Length: 417
Image (cartoon, rainbow, N blue to C red):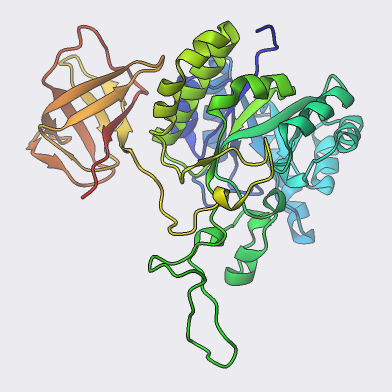
């Protein structure tokens, strides 16, 4: 296939996940500061962390985009001005913006800064793309409601110097271009200003006006009904179609997801894109592997969203709001000691004798058996039940064929109780 190589754009909710995204093959990462982005509940970046993250990425030829994509109210404007002053010399590669007022402010205060128009701006036709390009935007993020056919027409009729970015994987929103009012209505936390409480994942029933307090199921199912709960987007099986449509930047959703999600999604899409560009035959031959690997992320079943047709009832999950979880995230390797022990800050429980998997950066995994666990004082432990504890892990197997490295994610197969 002879196409321009797409950009793989990965979310990072904090400094550690940024490093994971970079190490596992991202071309670019998108992050948020502690204000004015649409994921206020993510860990996000202090100014010091943003500086460190940009330096880490740039040393490895990876770009960093910063979200400033809230719909601003009057009371936000002075704060945004101050924020732009603080970040203008950090080396950010682009800002992601949805509000026209914030866009104008960025053009005024940060001349020369590349600006991308967020999907929140519901960009659904080629005239809108050309409008933003004439205003000075370098890239427009496609509304999630577009089909590949529509995107291809946009690519044909929009300015050739303007890039198209689109989501290819991750959570879907039930509201138009993500512009939801449910969170603000129920909790006072405005999703359009970064504080969404995800009420689309809640259980709902109906009431009859004369029988207040009596909740009637919408469907006869003792597990309840989750009428707004969408499946997750996954386009791993359609890389050639995405490329052919003219999408340049393949965007993964998930700034509130774990390092395991980021590692698995980045590595799988990296391999799939590279394989496809090398040979579509190779890409097709490895499809079972990609599907297996992408299912290592936590997810709520998969859909192709609007890309091939309008979603039907089959794109929703009506009986639960839980994730499918095939692996448990244990931690990120912080050091490999001279004695051959790996050092992690533990995220979930595991025990001596358990098999754990180290995710190689290039796609190879290696399973090891835990021989011993030690705390920081080198006292032996039979299990590690306390999250955030620093641990030294010794394996039964040696590292003759596979050498764990700093930054690699470790995980274990998830077993239901």
